[in-house]
Image 1: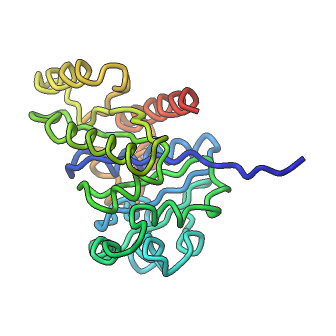
Image 2 (image 1 turned 90 degrees about the vertical axis):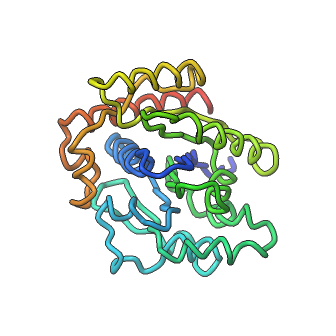
Length: 263
C-alpha cells in the first residue's frame, strides 16, 4: 500500500488590532495541545516576536527565523527550534519581518510564499499554529493563504466588533482569491472581566453577531496571564492552577472538537 504523507491542520490566529490576546492565545493553545501529546509547530510571523519570547527563545538563540523562510533564504525545517515544552517546536520571529512586505511585493505568487515553504516540511506535526501580526498586511495574507482555519481573539472592550468585521471581509477575500478551503473556526472573547458590565455587553453583541462561531469559553482578565511572558513561559507552565490557565485548557478542548468537525 502506498504511504500517504500525513498533513497537519494549520490554524492562523489573527486580529488586525494589537493587545487583544492574540499571541497569548496562540502560545497557550499550542502548549495545551502539546500537553496532551499533539506534535505542535508554532510559526511566529509577527515582527515583534512576542510568541518567541513567551516560550523562552531569546534573540541570541535564533539562528534563523520566519523572515528567512518567507524570502526563501532558508528551509522551514532549518529555522525550527525546540522549546522547553515536549512536543512543541517554534519557527521564531525576527524584526526583519517588518521589511519582508517590501521585499515580497514584486515577487510572483507572493501570497503563497509561506504555503510553499511549509510543503513537505511539516508532515511530522499534528498542528501548525501561526501567530499573525496585528495588521492586514502581506504577512497575514500569507498566513491565511497557508491555513486551513482561522481563530480570532476579540478583546471585551467598546467597539470590539468594529475591526473584526474588516478582518472577516479579508478572510472572505483570501478564501475567494487564494485559499478556497479556508474556514473561520471561531471567535474567542479575551480579557473578560465579569465585574464589568461592559464585558457582558460586548459578549452579548459578539454572540448575537457571530452566533455559534463564538467559543463557549471566555478568557478572563488575569494577572498571571500578564506575568507569564516576562518569565519566558506560557501561563499553563507558569501557573497551571490559575483561572487563565484553566480557561485556555477549556478553549483548546473546544478548538480540537471543532477541528474534528471541520475535518
